[in-house]
Length: 151
Image 1 (cartoon, rainbow, N blue to C red):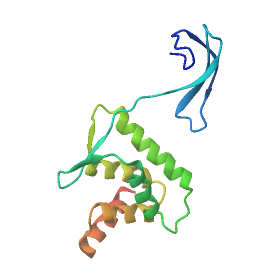
Image 2 (image 1 turned 90 degrees about the vertical axis):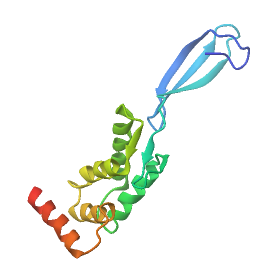
Image 3 (image 1 turned 135 degrees about the vertical axis):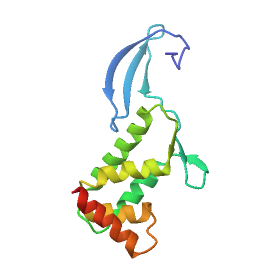
């Protein structure tokens, strides 16, 4: 690590600890040449994820869109927002851990539904109704019937 004061490449780590968000490691370093201390942060490099929409367009993955869709599905339901944030992180990490750099909105929707189904039946049906684009009451009834059969 290059010292920001003298430019020397040699330093030693004096202290390491996890950052508050848990996504990086904070390191206090001391330059071996000028003995001044500085802080660095180490984090995992993540490659950009591209979401392929139903119409074929592509856009960058946005975790807030997933979180907001779950918040809408759980509207007026008893759920801790931290649980939804944890699910969003879990989905994002699963995508990052896969070897694919692109994911379809269909697959993304399925990942969300897999995770919210055990949490709340009503939220699951709400999410499915938007995700699967129910056009009429019969498509809604089919989804509820399929949900009850799997139960």
